[in-house]
Amino acid sequence: MDKLDLDKVRIKDIVWPGTHDSATNRIGIPFVSRPFAQCQSLSAYGQFSQGVRVIDVRVEKNFRVCHGILKSYHVKEVLEDVKRFLSETKSEFIIVEVRTEYGYEDPPDFDKYLIEQLGDHLIPQDPHVFDKTLRELLPKRVICIWKPQKAAAPSAGSPLWSSAYLKDNWTDTDLPHTKFKNNLSHLEKQPSVQSRKYFYRVENTCTPQADNIWVCVKPVTRRIQPYARLFISQAHKKGLGDRLQIYSSDFIDADFVNACIGATVGRIQS
Image 1: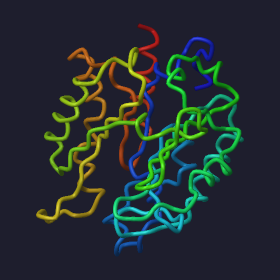
Image 2: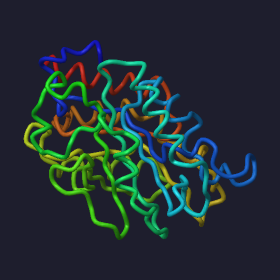
Image 3: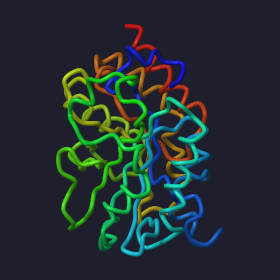
C-alpha cells in the first residue's frame, strides 16, 4: 500500500486480498484431523507478509481459534501477528474479522479484549470511512469487525465494527463451476463500491461435502484456485468490476495477491 497515492486512494478503491479461515495453519493433529479443517498453511503474519490484508478468524468461549469442532491456539497469537506487522510498516491497512464460530458461546467481554489488544490502531466504526483517503485515516490502520453469536454488536462510533459492514454470500459446494457462477450472480446484485457503505466479500473457495470421497480441504478447494484471475476478468467483462472489493482464498499464494493488486491499480487508473 505504500506504493499507492495515500492522498488520493480511498478505502473503497482497493480490491482487498483476503483469506478464509485465516488462523487454521496449526489446527488439529497433523496428518490426522488437520487436513479436514486447515485452510491456510501460513500464520497470520506470514499471510500479511505475502500481501494479505483481510483475515477471517473464528473463536470460541475460551478465546481459542477454531474451525468447526476443532480448536487451535489462543487468538492472542493472531493479534500479536497483527501488531508485529503494523510495527514493521507505516501505511499498510488491515481488515480483521473476528466471529464466534457457529455452535459456540461468545468469549466473555471479547469486545473489550479486542480494544485492549489493538488499541490506538483501530479505526472507529463510521460509514464515512469508505470515502476517506488512506492519508486521512492514518495513523490508525485497522478495521476490526466483531461478530458475536449472542453478545451485543458494536455500535456506531465504537472502536470495533459490526458485521453489518462486511457481507458475503456463501455457496456450500465442492463444485468449482457452481461456486464460480454463484459468485458472479451474487456480485451482480451488489451496488458499486462508489455508493456502497459496507465491504462485500467474494470467496474463491470450494467446500468438502460429506457425500463425496474427497473430504480434505486442500484437494477440494484447489479445484477453483486456478480460476481466480478468470473470475476478476469475467467480473470486468460483465461490467461488475466496480463491485468487487474483498476477494478471499484458501491457501493463499502470491499470484492471488498480485491479481488483487492488478485489479486495484486498474481501478485507480480508470
